[in-house]
Image 1 (tube, helix red, strand yellow):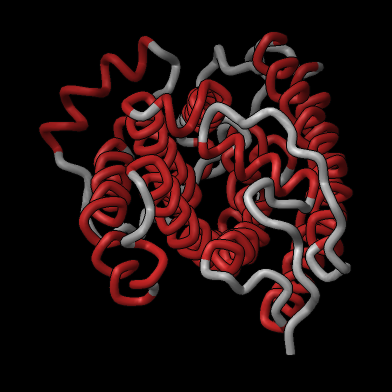
Image 2 (cartoon, rainbow, N blue to C red):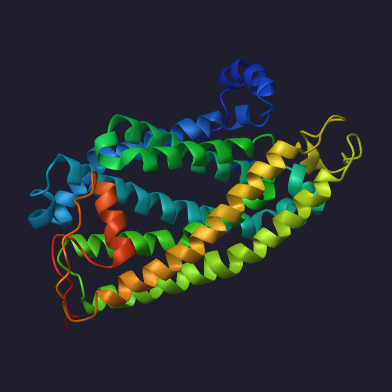
Length: 328
């Protein structure tokens, strides 16, 4: 399927970038640079001025009282909510309508490329370009952990432009189906809806989407990608089929380097392990918001706003206020 993005690649940009992309062994990247830039600019526009304007209208009693660090963190959650909702809808759409992608065999799943799947990778990469810039400029708010995550995620999505497992890009994007509910859960805490019936129902959706998309579907697809990459590692150079139109970027030298397979599989195993750990922490976080308040000893104050949020999610207890009973 051709790239359905509403802006076509700029010929001058493709011509200028292609030699550099070829040197980096990312030949399909030049066709999607404009999408990465467009996504980064779009999320920058949401971050400012859209989020401050909307937040003042929808939560005037809460947003205006926030200091600089908390406002930046709030605005970042707005961007995260919009990005995760948009990219999930687009990924699902591509999986439904891209017949070339759907009919790929194992070699095509590893080395194949379709413009639609490349667009999904580009839009995701554009978000992490935005994330990297904002985090770098506000390290006191987001911390080094968030910066490291932005760099690692950007590198992973960039490697997809070799192309490499282009097929699986849409699949693992769906890990983010739980992210909109996680952001809603976060906003409810900030607007004094902790323990409310609405937060309870959202918590059910959060846990269900996380469990089904990450632990069940994500683990199932990880087995398939491991199998395909293992088969690719055992395929000699020059033995990759070039008969299909989706093998546009395959050459006689195409192969999967051991370092690339190792890095991809190690990151996948790490993220799958973290998913199980996070799910346990999320269950604790959701259930503790609907239990009677208890005295909780004050811990050392986190250094950044992101660390505050991470601590609250992990423990289920806000360090600034005690958990409440569920409200009617």
